Image 1 (cartoon, rainbow over the protein chains, first blue to last red):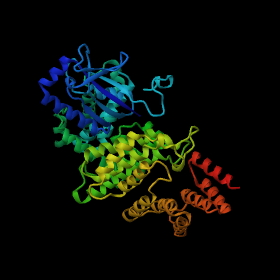
Image 2 (cartoon, rainbow over the protein chains, first blue to last red; image 1 turned 135 degrees about the horizontal axis):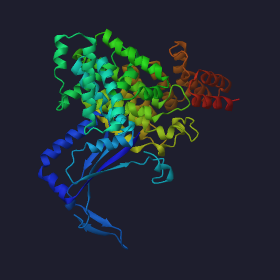
Image 3 (cartoon, rainbow over the protein chains, first blue to last red; image 1 turned 90 degrees about the vertical axis):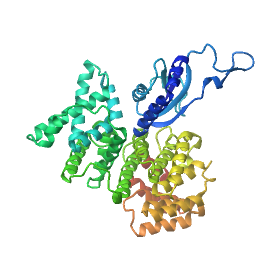
Image 4 (cartoon, one colour; image 1 turned 30 degrees about the vertical axis):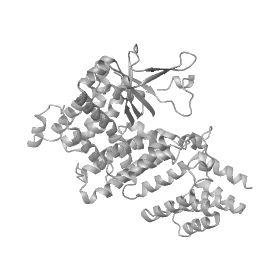
Length: 128
Length: 404
């Protein structure tokens, strides 16, 4: 078993589409969360505030540069996450497919590295 | 879609499918058989063409198989004719209703008419969605044993005419305790394997945590469910530190606490807070003890007085010789080995834990601390003879040898 993070990635268009029917989206997401809780797999979930109210700290130069949101050319924005405790990567993907998403958005599925492994080492590549 | 896809969907959907089918047919054994047939069909059929809605496909197929079985079993009877005439699949199943059915499924799987081993196997199968092979691996028993336990369990439930419903209010608390103890048995099988060559099997413990989380979602107002969840999380938090590189057990005192999983501790402490609303029950008390360890930077800085008090409370709410033995260990830390030895000797005099390797293990440790080396060695050798876990046995023999 492993923990996986389902990372919600929306575009300006998909975020706008979601905001247009936000009550429905919230209700559907609530049902999705209830299903994951009922299956005993949900560990944590958070949604992020409007990217317009965030900032980016950019380390591209000598000193960090702080840029106000919504970050101009960025195509996809991290909007929130679900943290799942599941037996296999496939199970995490299966849950991701069930997310009541709006067209154009994406979910990235990433395994949480365990404390006893060095992330991205050869050893961890083959694990699912 | 291949085998892994079928297994994944089954794992996610099995409890809901079996629950809905049991509600539909009123026959738990039949529902489970029909669901298994649907899985077997999926393994063949999905390879050729993937269904658009795999979960719906499994549900529809299982329902058809259930109807077939009923047709075969009974010459047309009004009730069954009615069922068979209405083959539409519940596309809009009421989620709240299904959740109640999953809860009913847990109560049936852990029903007191079943032998304890059967409850464990059945719960892993129908609620956890594990295959017989996976259950056999989890319990370290042969596959045919698991299959026989499940078959027998289904017959027992049918023979006893166990109704598919939530237990009546006056039995609810007791029956919930029964479910919790099955989940705890599964957890302990993972946290301290009773046999085999590995001490900790996190995958087995994980199944118990998952099922307990499910139960917590279904029974959010039951503090002891959160007590058990807290206990499991806080115990599992120590798994990374509990075995050395060679797989040998590392005792609490010797564990590198930096390896404890801080996220699991945080979840455990949060669950413990939810368990504390009406005074702690036995699982909550054990979780509180685990939380005391989790909060301590070292053995020396552990609040042993508090742990002794928690064990005393545990001894009142759930008296058991194992609790007494643990209390003795805590007393040894809080007040020294002599008063602890008195508790252990009382246990032995009353012969309350016959055949357990833990009693001589603890007695051996206490005698070692008291400097009574020869007696200590005898006790540790006795403990090694009684211990079924190879890793633990090796440690005991090592300690005994160090005393000669």
